[in-house]
Image (tube, rainbow, N blue to C red; front, side):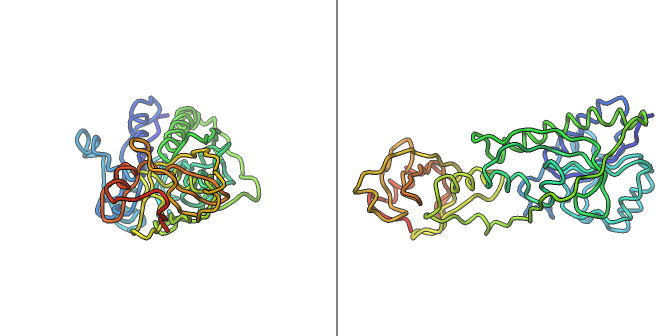
Length: 317
């Protein structure tokens, strides 16, 4: 059986899925739906699918609302066997879920039932990372509650940031699709209910990226790596204004007696070509490397500090 498939998604994962689905013998990719770029200005991980727009624009449709009655009717007219959702923040209503003859499949970047909701990988990195995974599930009226078709684990390491976390999640998602769709085409797939319990993450907003100088170095660095590009960034409110931090490191500097007496937020060193050392909570030190200073563009933190004549002993708070 060749599965007539519609892909609905807005992310780089969805864009990668296009290439995969078009190579699979059991799939007939009959349409791709993406969010109109005018409505995607606040979506950090948005992919406009420019390659498909250039090479196969007749299959690509940009919309603003997946539950719009006109859109629902157009999808019905395609009579798909499968709808695959990959990174769409609007909830699918029953009218959409009931369209495919087989399944409406969701790809979720967590090992369900753990990690329902939004901003999954950002939250997991903020928590420190560790063992994680992706799930392929049958969508229903609940939020990420449908039966599981497939799952695969991966690890979020200390070296990962949100960009590499997405690369890991995308990679295992493609693996699951590649091994699951042939089974569906052969009517040889079994789903299983999710276990009870689990966890839920709420959506994050740019204001949620504010950090405090009295946090531990671990907490600060987790925020930075979880909210760096393509997200709006973690930031400090300083006496100079909003300082967005894109890259930072743990300096592992042992504080002298004098520096232990200094206030949190104090500049301990300005290392040209390397970064800015500041004192944070628990008598720890972090090195800020790449930042966007107030009313400026992204630059190296030591360059900004030297241009603005910051001195050792100055306090950023």
